[in-house]
Image (tube, rainbow, N blue to C red; front, side):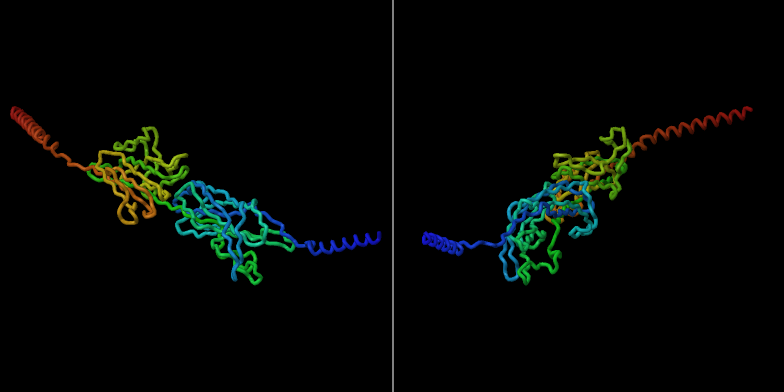
Length: 418
């Protein structure tokens, strides 16, 4: 019995010894995964001319895993960001606040004669799980704008997420950095990141968002009259049509430069008929042109007289224009400047019957496209009216002289009789 017990005990000891070599007990620490932050904010700047309104547009962004990079002697490895990141859209509108100087905390350069508006977009990384420490890269792009005249940046921005680990393997998202250079972070002596000398310093290529321009132009139209029968105080009706624009956009109208009238008294003179007035009230010219909801074009009637100019500012590149003058009993002539053909001095605009000019704004054009209407009313004034009445006048004079002679003769005779 004892012999059998010792045999069984020896077998168990041998088995335990074998198992201790075959399956050692692990005491290694494993990483504790971490999810990304729900809100990594960046800015969208829109730079516009200082005489333009902010366009009505919604900007769409895209985000995807960046390109992984292997470590080399000078750079760290970069991992492709895990799937699951998302980013919202931003919307600009004509009533947005604009700034003529760069505000504290904004990263952009503002040229002279420009202003800017800004909106904040948010990257959501809460559905992204990081399982290792290191640098994880995402690529952020601009995808589309509902107003196609708004410039989009074809170059992506790079969002690097720095994940760190403590001694227990607990992972933490320590920093997120948005920048323009796709190079991997520099490697320090301890083989960790050394792009900056001091923790918290900014990268040389750090940005806080996209900076884009909204290029615009000005459409002006003027009136001049000539001839001895031309009225210098007559108001002429001009219809302006703008096409290829976005609903909700607002374009300012400038009357000051050309000394045009913003308000015209009812029945201002015998030469003028204002269709929109109907003799009931003063006619108020529009301070701006607003593109109606759902529309891509708009027409507006203006009234203008000799020596005046009216300008519509902030029209986007790509917009079409038609300026039509109502036909009057004047000889019309129309000239266009600034609407260049492929960058040359040749005018691209089409002039029809000297009453209408039509064209489009493009990048080759001058800042202002000017349509000048000249109306001539000249004639030969007849002098026959004076010659026709001359014999009658001479006859009347002779008849009067005869009467005076007879009266005088009678008076003399009467004196002699006395």
